[in-house]
Image 1 (cartoon, rainbow, N blue to C red):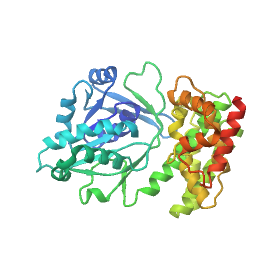
Image 2: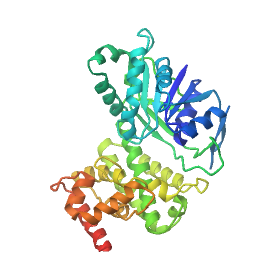
Image 3: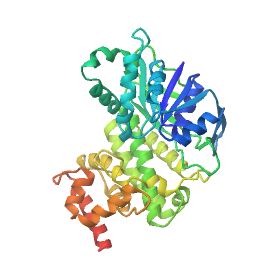
Length: 383
């Protein structure tokens, strides 16, 4: 069995690739970073270090890497004979993965089992995004190629921080992980991935993860940066920041319970587990890494505006979420292009224009005026 994974970075090696290896798959990484590809190909093994309670080391073998920028034909050939394709590249990069898959499907033996495609991204229904790009590229040929692949959405969760210097291709991660995969697309032949679990309805898992883990992580980062704290674990050690993060997650939990009929006690326990994970002092994670790309994180269907908008529509509390958005507006990192752009826009646009453009909210939406108010407050600070 063979799996091709796009994105040979820390998440690719330390989470998705690790589980595929444990499932017995020959592992082919595809990436555009030549030094990383060369480093992987120079190694015969790498170690995933899970740090914290229940952690340990796992050695990964049986892998290689291909530079998809320099040798796209080789990537296509690998996919054409693969059983699985996965990604961990970021939702905006999926459109660049699609051409390789289209070309590979054209070469694939029609008698082979369908290629199992799963995008493992921090986005709702990311595999659908990838599939739509593939269908559009294939055009009239899609009717012939469609039977050669199946597409399943996933929800993935593991904290993989920035890595310490000198670690080579080894990866440090937290012990906790979750990989939920929708079952129906596979019929009676789901892939064999130890540690992954298959569910009939993925939406509750995606939103529980996005609106708890991602919302909470970003909230910690933005309040931490505002307080001048460097590490995520140190930020949560500050009682005032911990209280703000807890308040945000209480609001997202109220939405999840109301929308998906989750058990309130189970969600409270999940929330507590998430906070313990963030507080792990052995994870060398910084507020600057977690807080990067604030414009994306403030967009309409992302971790702040997404749950806050739905909560406002249901008449639920959103005060803490809007406060976290205010902290995000103050995220000022000259090494992050989106942070620089955010600070430029907030200086150049009036509050209503900025709110509509960045959050995607319409002026008549019940959340709009609350967000506009924190934008105006940030602008007043800068004046």
